[in-house]
Image 1 (cartoon, rainbow, N blue to C red):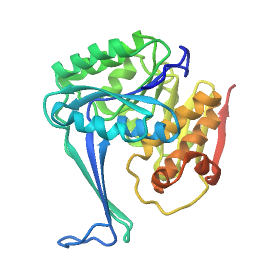
Image 2 (cartoon, helix red, strand yellow):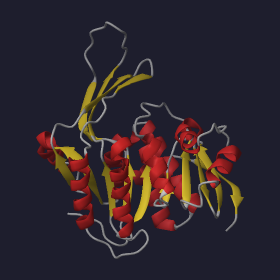
Image 3 (cartoon, rainbow, N blue to C red):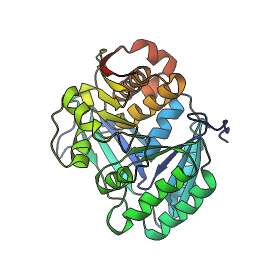
Length: 327
């Protein structure tokens, strides 16, 4: 079981919450072409979705956390068993709903350094399911906890139910981090609920309703317009690194260490988890951004599967630039 910490900013439990979970099936082979028949070198099957990926990243960093959200009732027991075999740092507290959780497939050509992602839309979220999840969150979330809402979230008729999930956690005096996009992100931000949002460049443009040039200065200027609703904006720039914007300043960074990229899947989730772990440890945005970039790079290079965090932390060098410090 996850040990409860004393209430306070960063001192409570970390709870990841996703409403569009998946089983990730990853297949690797050296050399793939259309129409070919090859033996794969590796196949990995595990519970996933962005929220679960954040849980994995936090566990790799040694941070206990709770994985909450929706999961298909037909394979919920299988998910719980898979999560519990990972070392005990993740406590599954999913809300089962009717149906089976979708499967997503990633095919990686290790020789050609290419990858293909085959995704299905999630059909688990419904009004009934979201109401059940909301009821469970009212019991689960307490003052001082950190709630991370990550992944695809439904809009349309279900949008208000999604915003209510976040509002429930905020009313419990939890700190809210959000990594989603589209109308759900816009609705959550408009309600002034998040402490931090973590969009990529395209998602930031969508949120603002206009194009933003992918430079630190332009991204920072655009993100500042959101600071009346959120305290911090962490913008992922892919291979170019990330930009962190708050009322106290702007920091940009990227990895200086170069290695072969094995897969980009989940790198944004690991960036967010690393940032949170670094911030909670030091309260220093510069250190937090550096930690997030190291964790994201480790994910891209496959080191999160083969190495431990204390080793990786020393091996990866990042560059952090203070673009505007108002501290």
